[in-house]
Length: 252
Ligand SMILES: O=C[C@H](O)[C@H](O)[C@H](O)COP(=O)(O)O
Image 1 (cartoon, rainbow, N blue to C red):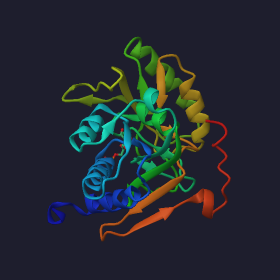
Image 2: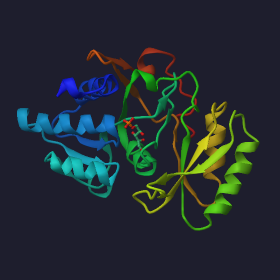
Image 3: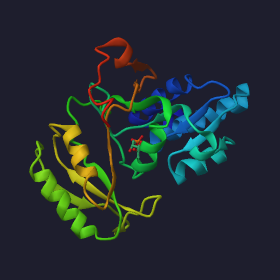
């Protein structure tokens, strides 16, 4: 199995295996989406079979719900669970304050709802996801299909006045057709290059009618687990280890 994994997948797996150790029996767990989160869900399934771990999982996408069920994890909704003990999810970019871009797989809306319902949010990623400044990865914005071209124009106008390097807005396609999210919405990818003020951008985007949510996760993550291809994983916990003062935490 190990032989067939790329070095990036080995790193993703290392971070997921480390984060799986934070999960204890009886916990209600938010289950992320994407290739890194898939390693986590499989590991939790393995722990259930090997050690009798008992958890309830709240998936952040239909895709993760399917995988969790395949692994024998009890799947529930947030309505059923109430607050979660922990949410573990991947990311597309993470800056030094653990602010993130998410939604590369189109699951940002459920992911943000599930993450903000959890007492602890752990991000799992390979080292390449760590960036000094967010924005090289296109920022996904979930919009409703009604009035899409008008919403898109308003987004273009909004970013024209903000501290970013690029301004291209692209409708996400899959197999030549507009990508459809689990909520039946569309994704606009904002090619910004560099996001000088993520908070200003997040607030501005979410004021636009037709925008459901954006992929900036500001002040949401508590811990970052960075995996390496040799199987090592570093746990970065800025709240505990560094300044501990995340200016976004109270705001978004
Ligand atoms: O919508 C998808 C999610 O935000 C993913 O967690 C993110 O795109 C990272 O995915 P991966 O682990 O596949 O790089």
